[in-house]
Image (cartoon, rainbow, N blue to C red):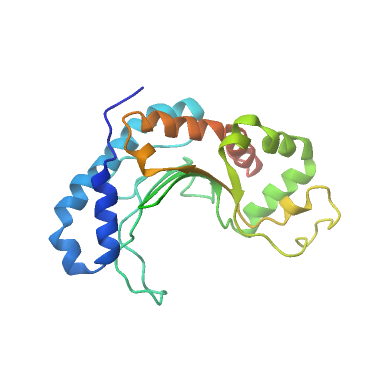
Length: 229
């Protein structure tokens, strides 16, 4: 399914200017641009992406609600940050599992920032219980995890990222054949894209292919924490 381009160069231009003018006065003066070039186009993108997402998994959701849906808020939480800049200078979309309100789950992610566009998949900083389930599944079924890492679609599109422990996690064999993966604190992977890609009319199809290439990785993580794929 191909639709007209929803993401435009004006989205990146707005975010670039916001980076230089990250204050309430400038944002309020340019809020109509934010609505026209960022918020509304991305809400339409989310609604249209539901068709692609349902072909990958029926349990991950494209939620186009303006509040509480798949689109991240532009407002930063500055309560515990030394940086008091009120606005994010990137736009993000997160397609969550239907159980995301109850447990820490993997997700599909689109990051849009001037000079930095990427697709992401996986689970970032999972809690101890969730992380242990993933590690246990790798130990119990190492061949399945190896198949994920060797999957041609995943391997050609994504690069594993995230933080790792310096030593083996407590309770796991430091000599295990997959110890470097067991040390992971994040199970996330990133696919490089570009502003040019994002502004093409068929970008929604391209991003759908990126997410589809992560099927083996996302299925493994989702099943490992006991959720339906």
